[in-house]
Amino acid sequence: MISSGFAAEAAVGSALLGLAVGWFLDTVIVRWATRGQEQESVPAKRRSRTWLVIAVAAAGFVLAYVQFETIWQLVFAWWFIAVMILITFIDLEQMRVPDRIVLPSALVGLAGAIALEPEKWWVYVAAAVGASLFLFLLALVWRGGMGAGDVKMALLMGAALGALVVVALFLAFALGAVIGILLMATKRKTRHDVVPFGPYLALGSVLALLFGPEMVDWYVGLLP
Image 1 (tube, rainbow, N blue to C red):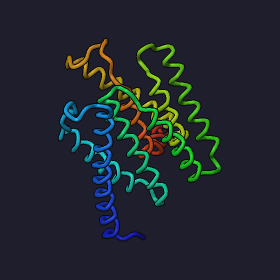
Image 2: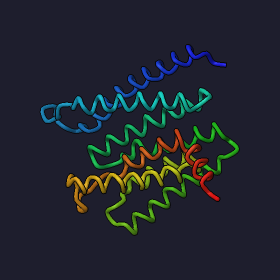
Image 3: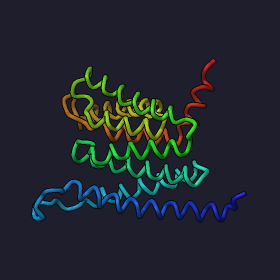
Image 4: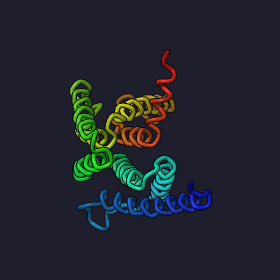
């Protein structure tokens, strides 16, 4: 049995690692946002965004430590959370999900997921293809509501989450609907404003990664 003292130290270590990774992610976000710009035209880094990235990374790393038992599951979860944070803040600032991040991450995610559960390799492949196809068809029907970056992001989500991508997509659309209604109710956004969907996909994915099995069990328990 792991002693409470060791568990507390490991949790603190996870938080510190999250802080360091968050700082690195913020640096990447800034450099990504200012690529190709002259030094004089580069906007000052917003400290509020910096500390938000760092805090989110630290919290995510601690939650992952609490949820996962093996070191390789934990390392995979940390990697996935870091990628989702990176995509979220780039999409919020630039309204796009970069191919140079999401596509290689989809390959890494698929390889990592299969390495953890080789007997379920087909589940991760099917989830990647199915999730991206679902958003692709939705993009065809809902013009302007879904972008190509979101479709590619679904590929990453399915590759890393497997069957839990269903939970991630449900949470993403539910959160998007609720937050969208709140933004319109407070007149911060209108129906005609373009809102990036990547952050909702990222949040839904991280919640599914951390709490997906419990959510499924809770839902099944409600069935007669």
